[in-house]
Length: 264
Length: 278
Image 1 (tube, rainbow over the protein chains, first blue to last red):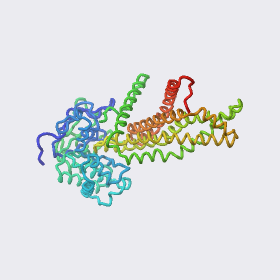
Image 2 (cartoon, chains in turn purple, green):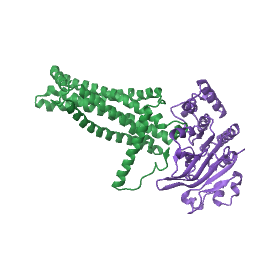
Image 3 (tube, helix red, strand yellow):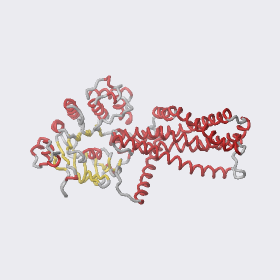
Image 4 (cartoon, rainbow over the protein chains, first blue to last red):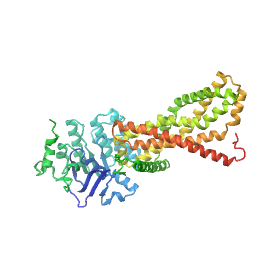
């Protein structure tokens, strides 16, 4: 994949603090257009915070986040809204709107953005639902009638409806069976091949990392970090993860518990 | 954009900290309310959603407000009759009860029922949406969650509560009249004459006007609590409880302030004898 030189997303020395609790500290990351980057790490190390920083749902307490060279902190509300329309977000729980059926969920962003006729909107919704492997008859179903895998697919269709330049996936395969995990991985891969989209995937699933990512960043929980150590303990190709010289990286990849975590 | 420091569990104690936290929360609520009120004038306000919410807030509250309004009127009649009869003023019961119902009990009762029934439900609904990341999803789809969710709820409460108050007033009047005229056999002519002499349009307007403020505050408090809801079933439950408790206190405090203000205004407009034209 060709990567023009300018990063589409930049995190410059970013820190996030909730009261006295530091979640992210001094994170610096450049994400190039078209890249597919997996963010891995233990629960609570700040992976989801990082995604929310990128789309402006969280403000950094230190540093700045830039989207196409513009600092999110300097954007006005209207500009931030326009930016968000260029970013698709697949939430961990899919976050479908309970009171709307599948069609209205997928069409929601299109209606908010405006500019499409009713017929074009219908066609776009059907196209996206087909793209994620859902039949037309699912359109009238309510989210409560869908399985976990179907919800994720509808969430993906909704995120893709606006043809985003960047796709953010928050643990897209969590809670799914192995077959559905593979289906979602395949859909993420297809999304990349069908359109020039930059992907940032937060995941614990190593199969997802190997299948979809061409770069992996591993975060380490600040609470267990030695003073002065960097929170990003790995930044490189997924294929080199298991041969990392850092034992913490290998431990995560192999799924080994630390000694003190073993309950006797 | 949410601040990373917003959802901080407070650990400090002390009076100054409590006051400081209270002021911060009040400021946060004021900013939230300003955004919601701006949303009312936004072109994105969805009328279909507004009508649905008006039905939820208004139509579905009719039964409970009618019943409670009627019983409040009946109870007032029962409680007041003995005392006024002792001094031979039982025919004044209409004036006493109807004045209380129209100016105080009707608006406050409708507001409290709305806070308990609708406010808590709103806080729980929005709290669940927050926990399940639906609020974040709205923002990601280019929609301001405050304008989209809070503005129509605010407007629905604002529009419906005067009608519910009027219903509570009427039912209170029906209940008290039934007890006074049918149960205690008070002379209807004197009963209505006293009512007409002491209860005027001013009293009805005071009651209805303050109910509008109550409705607005109920919606804004409930939605704010929902938006600030913490994770988990307990967090959602806490948001619903807080919505009711804060609304309840706010209603009574506003009622007091509004009462003082209305009396001062009345004296300013009709300084001579203090009686408003009926």
